[in-house]
Image (cartoon, rainbow, N blue to C red):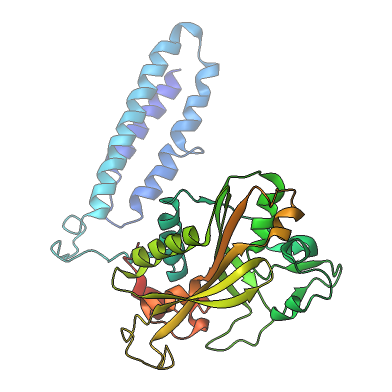
Length: 342
């Protein structure tokens, strides 16, 4: 016991005399005296060898030693971090190193805005797998095998099993929802889709869609039009004009494409709208009765509408981004423009 007390006194003197102003001196001190393999930890291990009637006295002495070491460590840290104490000329009025603020990707910004608008109309978000089977991607959507409508989409097939594909549209999510849920159904399906196309400024092998589906009793084309009117005015403003043109989609009848007045030229004519003053933004229509029957939904009782749009096209109209490749190149110069957007 006496020998240990003598050793502790010597350590106190050693700790008191320890000095230095270099940045790493405090860490060296901590490792030597306060670390898990340090001197004080080693002395603490001697407690088991101290007689029971002297353990209290030894514990108090060790606590004093540890407190002394911790105070010394704090003073060394302050000396090492202070330019004044370390003899370093440092201007404390200089601004700190700037921290670059992150930002959302423009596709994410547009997706969140679209979801927010349709949620106000009672639409829930539904999601599904990006690797899809033929039934949900084609057949259930009124496109049986060898149907000419399949040629409208250049598909990526999985070599190991040609019955599986990279989904060509998020309509497959609508199919999965109708498979499990009975009307009323009111959903939007945002997600990534894939088509075997040559990559260029106007086309890509993957892009993003948002599709919507509403099925209930007495749903009409007027309901579809009013829903899309609300969306366009919330997304692009009250002054944007809208028109519908007859079209064809295998899973809707009647079908239409919806155009809006060009947001770049205000409808006067420019390269974006090909000098027509109009830009197509989505396809839509009333859900085909056969599609309802495929999922056991009574087409005599229920009707519905569906629509689908590309997020990249909405981005193009909002932010005037004319090259689809920019969305996936991770060019910081491009992405920095959207910092601060919501």
